[in-house]
Amino acid sequence: MTASVNPLAGKRLDPAMLVDVAALTKAYFDQPDPSQRTQQVAFGTSGHRGSALSASFNEAHILAIAQAVCLYRREQGIDGPLFLGIDTHALSRNAFETVLEVFAANGVTTMIDEKLGFTPTPVVSHAILTHNRGRTSGMADGVVISPSHNPPADGGLKYNPPHGGPADTDATGWIERKANAFLADRLAGVARIAYDKALKSEHVRRHDYVSGYVADLANVVDMAAIAREGVTIGIDPLGGAGLDYYQPIIDRYGLEATIVSKDLDPTFGFMTADWDGKIRMDCSSPYAMASLIGMRDRFDVAFANDTDADRHGIVTRSSGLMNPNHYLAAASAYLFANRPGWRGDAAIGKTVVSSAIIDRVAARLGRRLVEVPVGFKWFVDGLLSGTFGFAGEESAGASFLRKDGTVWTTDKDGIILGLLAAEITAKTGADPGVLYDKLTAELGQPCYARVDAPATAAQKAVLKNLSPAQITTKELAGEPITAILSEAPGNGAPIGGLKVTSADGWFAARPSGTEDVYKIYAESFRDEAHLARIQDEARQIVGAAFAAA
Image 1: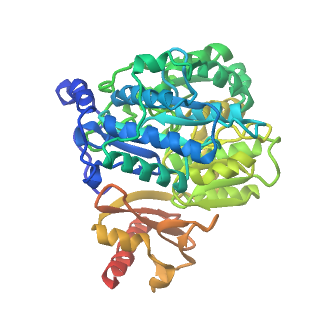
Image 2 (image 1 turned 60 degrees about the horizontal axis):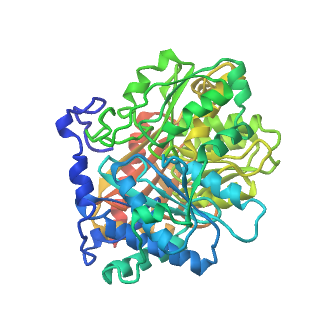
């Protein structure tokens, strides 16, 4: 980040600085202005997100989205059950009630937690795939109500079609357009019944999410080895949806594990502030993870998840909080050496902005590397077919196959990535941080960073549509440029920006979808000075493209 670290980073905030939950939930029922772009429905890479306090996540938005989802299901011939998940953000409960009112009124069979508890994103994906396995009709899909690791005042809703993973842009674009049409027409055509009536409806069914997911874990992670070796594990759900899952996991498999915090508070006042002084349940942030990092010597390995448990943060005795890129490299190296049931041509999937150490791991393993644009949706088909053994992105999201080489989830699963860290420790006698150090001793030590640079809306549009032909520079930080990419080499899809590579480094530049900045991801296999030079030249290259436009 270019901004300086806030003095409150890594500290708990004064109660007076926490979100006013009563005011937030009251604002949920305010009416947005659909003529304002910022108050319309907008599906990004992880669904629609916003806050009632900024009129971007209100009852009207959720009514419109829910009705649009119902129409999309009819359009696509999806007539099986819809699995509904929810996280612990304050607005999630309001949104849950709203979507249930619409789904029940539309006759959609909706599977909710049997105790009206919380359901993580990977558990919903697992439930969809479990239901659909072997079926050709009556296919299930799902909705998860969560803004991921976003601050407590935010809300979010994402749709997962029958493949179990994040919806592609065709689906989200259709839902977004239809929802905004409902908003513009003052919700005319939205069917709804009262929440109490919806709960009692024949279309709303209680489902035991916990048992089905927990009992199946032994088919994807070597739970017996973790228990047998007595690996001590610290687990911090960060007050999220994983809270209902970890004790059943510990009990079923006899793990030497401790849930270090069972706090459940919609203000998330137990969290330490992130780099900018805001509360954010980001398990890849050393500031948000300060509490668990401080316990690193108490456990052989520790991990945390964000509020919908689709991301992972791994804390080891050897290296503290692992950089997500480092753990992706260590995890992929370990898995492909310890999953004989996977097909011989199973590939490693990564995003274009993930570390090139993963490329070197793939080459060492003799495995194909598939590099895709940012967004987990690009991994869905490969995980579903078993052609991707492991798929991960730099923002601490990943999933991998069952031991027999079949699909586990097609969405990110922070729970199995945390348990995998314990398996690695059990089976190798060393934590993942040690494994990563061994890899870099052999393959090189990368220096990786992401920084932001200012950009107007017009400049961001230029960056998003840049072509390699517009870049005339021949060198990057003193080395010949080996590739200039505007499309991901793994699938030819646009990356929404530019990537430039050389033998010992690379950068990628992508416009932010929410702020007047563009993001520069950069990496050097030399040193920090070389990394800084790559970043400087990245700004120059992008700046020249802006000037030419």
